[in-house]
Amino acid sequence: MPLSGRKKNGAESGRQHGAEARSIPGWLATDPFSGVAGLLNRWAAPVLWEALDEKVTPLSVDESVKLRGAKMELKATGQVGWLFLSALHTIYRRTLTQDAEIRKLRDEVAALQERQLLMKETIESAVTLGDQMEARCTALAVRVAKQKSRQKPKIPSAVQVRALVRKEN
Image 1 (cartoon, helix red, strand yellow):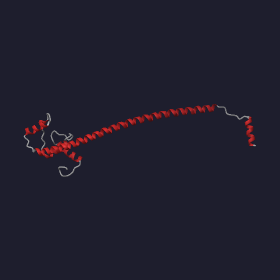
Image 2 (cartoon, rainbow, N blue to C red; image 1 turned 90 degrees about the vertical axis):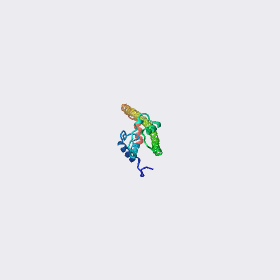
Image 3 (cartoon, helix red, strand yellow; image 1 turned 135 degrees about the vertical axis):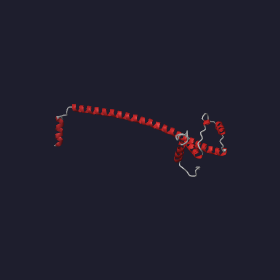
Image 4 (cartoon, helix red, strand yellow; image 1 turned 180 degrees about the vertical axis):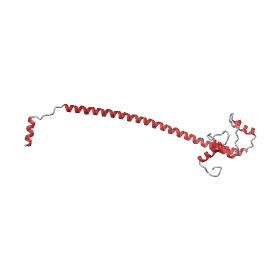
């Protein structure tokens, strides 16, 4: 359930918090956690923890809080931290799932491209073979036509003529 009491869609919420993160010194709207920074900016003034720039560990975070003398109610802070950690974990799992889907789709695209290339080569081979067969058929047709033109016309013999005349009578 959203903390504001009204439900927002993810794109609207992300744009709103990203815009709020732009006004925070040291944060860009394109940073991966700009949405979190924007939401925190709505709850409290931005605090840049310079002590965490070196190496971030749970102990260094605890020491930084103590050194700054920040008075925080640990239970409420822990609940908010768990909320953000749960959201981050959910987004991370979703990202892993989407990455796996992207890899699967890329593999499918690669397989389809290979099949397309194979089909293209098969078609080119068939066209070449068809052209060769057409050339052979044309050569055979020319050869048959030349042979027929060289043949002597057949003149019927006298016996054949007499037989034909007798049939008619």
